[in-house]
Image 1 (cartoon, rainbow, N blue to C red):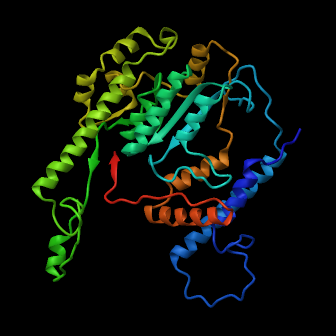
Image 2 (cartoon, one colour; image 1 turned 180 degrees about the horizontal axis):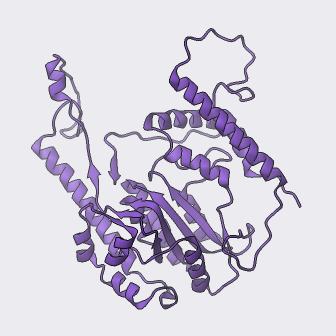
Length: 384
């Protein structure tokens, strides 16, 4: 039996609001007289190619979604999806920079990974979670928020296994460390436990050109890391204390996450794995927390990762942990949404991300969704 396109049609409608200059969209299909334009720049051409490509993909997704038969609940089979509403393994993907524009309140676009994890903890039909991570890290607070969302699954008695894909470093590993078990590929890049704050100073350059910036501030540190001057010794100490305090939080959470053992640990963790995890107290993690990166194979040796493997092994482990061999994964069937999330989170430059974010806010207003408050702060404080 065929089913409607569902969220794909919503995504297409929303997408038309994002892409100016495309016939049929509220912003591009106007009937006013066409203004005379100057020469078409390379950036304009790139925007048009991107817009056309997304619309083609959207059209294909809508056609396929409209004719695709509804998924049937399966009795096993790793590659088959469980029907929504049936007892299942929820698949959540964390991709791109943490704290970047990976999710949106815009109708039809994918929700953020932290909201997916929270919903999985609340949803009685979700019996376990498979967390796929492909992230170099990102904002400190957002990484910690995701970490807490994973630990909330423990409190809900729902096992969670993390798969580290191409890269799961710094904030990406921070999130993974809360999982009941971690799989990685041999060549996965992971680790990079640490924090960094960086900035640039153009003071001497401006001085050479006779430019003298003027700053009016309400406190000694209000223009901390201003690009117009070098940091004072007091500011350097303050910033170093900030990153060191963040590092201690990172170390503590990784140690707690790795020393935590799932309820049925003996069914999915070998004795050697358990021993490596138990050895990762705060002192041992601190020895590894100098920013170094590891391959997946190296991470297994030091205990940051439990085993080499991926999707198939994780699903089989989750079935054993829940005691239900019939559970099937769900959540990976939204191919178009995953492509769009990837474009927004990692495929665009920071300038283009800002431009898209502006269009998202404008389109929210167009469909009656209130603007969300935004806080922009420089320099960016990240885990990477």
